[in-house]
Image (cartoon, rainbow, N blue to C red; front, side):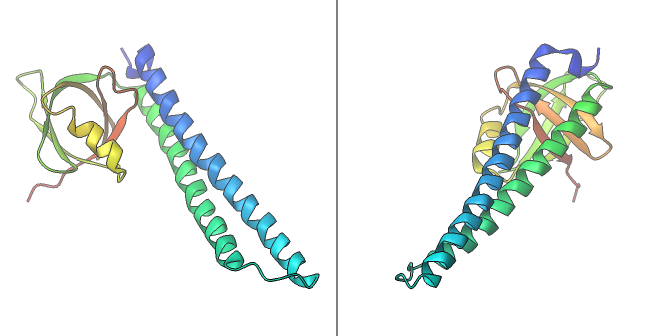
Length: 169
């Protein structure tokens, strides 16, 4: 059975998609606010009003920060779409998660014929890394979305986590 047929998987992907939309919407809103504030600062200066201390810096911060957030949201939405397409083709596998470092994990498959899968978490968000670390020793479901990329989740996680195959040294 494809992983996407599981209602929990669809819910987890929807939560990830909602987060991407929040980042995209918030970023676009910050860019719009930056332009509106920039126009207001210029208008005040043209009318001979007192200069707004730090106004220009605030405009630049809003526009640049907003663009970065919008790009992060767009990337999240594209990644979620790609993962959903892959999860429509592949089934979940189950295994036990072992944490080997801050973002280094290993999934020990339930099947005795399968080799342990060394992975490196893709997320750079501290809260997501800590959430995965709390799953140490727990039962997880994982699926291959490309030869070098996997997604994993656990009951109650509320989202899916992306990981890449870790290179062995």
